[in-house]
Length: 489
Ligand code: PMP
Image (tube, rainbow, N blue to C red; front, side, top):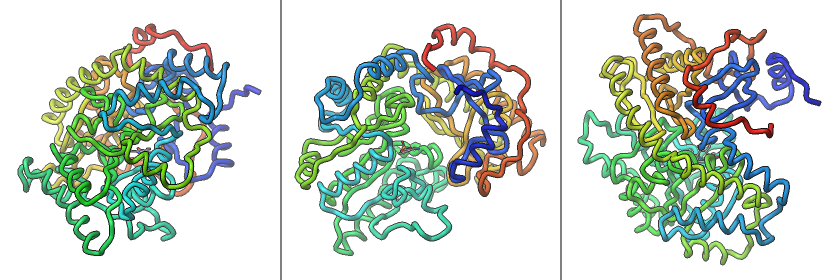
């Protein structure tokens, strides 16, 4: 039955049946989103929100070409990869063509977590090493093997039942603004060496303990850790050290891949580095669960020699692969990498203008469709402006702009929108950030306005939906005319 529930009823059913660890955006007044198109989302009242954070619906929410590719294949066949199918091999071929030539073998899986878990398995069987090096603040996935290497989660577990295993070693996060080595104390040219030395120290300790390095795993740009762009040559230097210790290097491109940087399809490539294993996910299926692991012929051979087959029920099924191909097509046909460059350059300019106007902005970092604004209470001390960041996220929602915040202090405003985000959208965003930062400067921000912070359990206080007024961001009508609404719900 197609019952139309009120938001209040949806909240109560969720409270009743869904595990309380599954949290919502905007806890005190969550959004109920019923449909989306391109860079816009619509709530149950038809009100429009500009999506600045959904990097999964990479080529635009419900892009008709992607929806059509998936539904056509669903009508025809969906089965596992033990049967021959052209979709799987053609997608493999097309993706491999975007990778450095060494990374010519692929495994299809269903999520970023599965991809990273498989990457760790590949690394173990290839190197026969046990010791894993990961970055501080990292998040690589929700399964046991990845919580082990994700201090973003691990550091917040309070019952003591999941602690960092001894075989996991945490290297300094190469954040030159807020990390161990800061731009105030060290010239930028030294940063790559300084942060790479943190990995070198770990390798030396592993070897002194007579153990073998297995791998280094890191995102090519750190997203959950606070939108961190590494110092130039950092990855190259670390990869060299890890390899000379017999380990392999895993680049997690789950968030930052598929052209988000604009200049390159892959962020590691933009930094002139070549990993041994690459994991991709989120944007790959534009919201459909498909992910993959790329590696060298040698690593793949070691894995094959471990004695067991690799089988993944849904990985590489014809529907997922049809969708994966459509995403690649749209990135090209809609010129989304070019758009990322154009919008990224514009934002760089505008964010810097905002920074010269608002003391609240301590640091701006980003490229293409990936930006972070590190908010501070004081530029000299760099004390994180956590409550101000919460205020901005919540007020932006009232203005129908969806933003989020992250980093260890939850003070970094994140921008990672669908790649069809336009220049007009960027203008809207900047105008509103200016407005909200002015409100903060004028003391209008209510202190402790923290309704985005997860509280204990599902503590909703709810009556009726708050937004009564229909609102648009003024640019969407022309944008929406570009696409007709898909007929499949
Ligand atoms: N790696 C990174 C960098 C991620 O951000 C995430 C998800 N946020 C994952 C891996 C895990 O992906 P999934 O949720 O698809 O398992």
